[in-house]
Length: 163
Image (cartoon, rainbow, N blue to C red; front, top):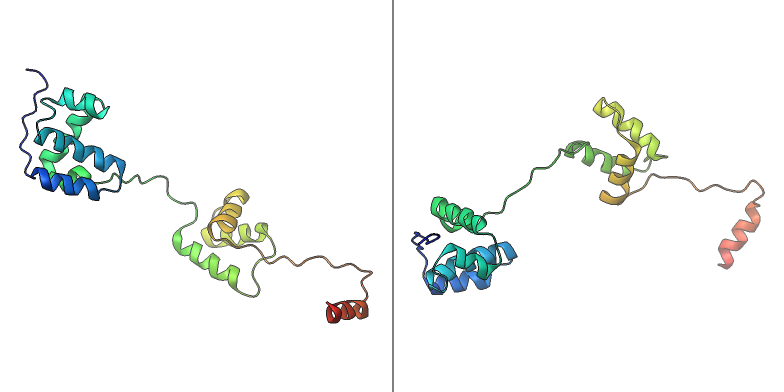
């Protein structure tokens, strides 16, 4: 019979139930459900288990191969995507954060770009700097607000006293 699973599941039904209730991720639950279905004989074949779980048969076979190779640890292991490396390394990001918190700070994002160019030795895009500073570090350059030339200091002091 095609699709009949020849795998020995070391865990008992109770252990699988307990692990199933402890799982926090959906993918982990699905993988444990596969083992549970095969252990309790609710699914006689991988094809039957695939239809019960709503997954492709090949996906379930990949999961079972992982289980055969490394047990539950390998089966429940999360795949970590490395992704593209950051434009600004972590150490320089910390230095920038410290510099932003200092009293002098920076006057503009352009000034931050120049500072990073001196440190990195390459140009960093304005948009990258803005996103890093504004969204990731939750900071901003120290920009002085413009003051009117017609502002009278005595009226300003009177306002501060009465406010």
